[in-house]
Amino acid sequence: MKALQYRRIGAAPEVVTVPDPQPGPGQVLLKVTAAGVCHSDIAVMSWPAEGFPYELPLTLGHEAVGAVAVLGDGVRGLREGDEVAVYGPWGCGTCAKCAEGKENYCLRAAELGIFPPGLGSPGAIAEYLLVDDARHLVPVDGLDPVATVPLTDAGLTPYHAVKRALPRLVPGSTAVVIGTGGLGHVAVQLLRAMSPARVIALDISEEKLALARAVGAHETVLSDGQAVGKVRDLTGGTGAEAVFDFVGAEATVRTAGAVVAVEGEVGIVGIGGGTLPVGFGSLPFEVSVTAPYWGSRGELIEVIGLARAGAVAVHTETYSLDEAPRAYERLHAGEVNGRAVIVPHG
Image (cartoon, rainbow, N blue to C red; front, side, top):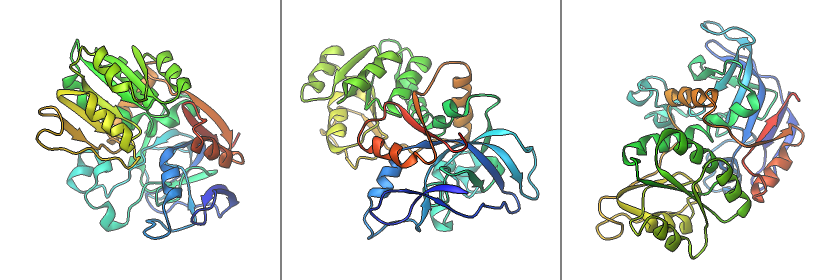
């Protein structure tokens, strides 16, 4: 089969031919109908050789929707042809966090060498994907694969972050979204669907701010040296009850800390390497700072439910498998407005 692989440190990903995977007991082979392209992959390909955490070559792609092609021995509850989305953060399935469906916070994944597809295990930007266990598959029930596949990360990750902040987002509150690209423009929609908060969106790109307005942001602010003052003015000087930073760079986390309100919450979702000092006097009183990672299996079902109800839709642009390297080039250049999706079978 064809697959997009990162093969050498510092090199661009390549479309290559690899053996077709075969499912063992309990495993499921999917014919991939859509696979997402993510900034996390750029981060992986930016790591230096020293300390690189995965074996190469690595087939990329941790967002996947596909049709069941072959069932391994012992698999129950699925049939060939079923269309499913893949829950990406695989865990051991037996620890306390996995028992809650929070495999994103599995306590033993590192110890046991369990990796998500595309982030250590062979990924989804290929004609077929081998899934380790049927519990990681969620029926999509006729939803469009291209529209659905970004929900497995670009939908699930902001959903998890927004959901935990909902107690603070009461009528009259404000939420700030920093970075309105692939995840951020979904967060704007989730905030509008799940809370009464006023939503202020920040980005350095006027094009992405236009997308934020199109999907429901009440206010948009260019993320420059004047952004903090503008957000403070828009909130009457008090700041925002919840701030979601989908960039996570040093400059954006500083902005997040500067615009959060007393007893507010900052969620640093982006992996840009920035850190926010926490301590008495460094932030407004009783501010919580979190660094959430993906979401639970149950939350993925909830996100897909919101999409089915028409409450959230991801802006996408599609590429063939042979065009996948170009999709990463555009993503790295900041030219993807929304989310890039690979369609391996046309």
